[in-house]
Image: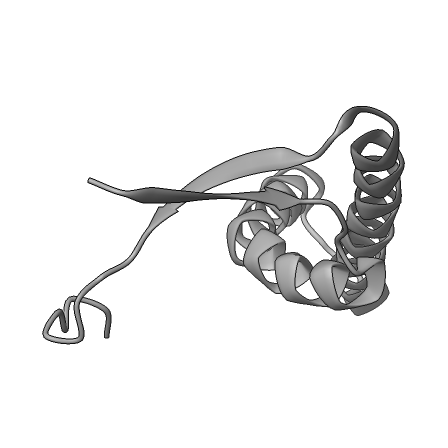
Amino acid sequence: MKFTKKEIVFLDPMHTAKTLVLVYLCFSVPIVLLALFVAFIRDGSMPGFTVISALILNAVLGFGLLWIACKVYNWVAQKFGGIELALKELSEETDDIQ
């Protein structure tokens, strides 16, 4: 089997962080909501401001940390090399991707 080696040498921080924060939120929002639910059960009340600010802070922190991670990756890739991928050509008949 013939492979083509490629190397990821740059990630656009803004585009990558926008995309990955949506994936991150799919997993983190249920955890944040569970924590807020536990706090509600414990305290008996939960201000709406707390819920909204927790969700917004989660999204902003997630985006910011992913943006920083892209910047760090770009620096590391420039100094030491990026992640190497081995890709293979697929025939046009393959319709496995939907």
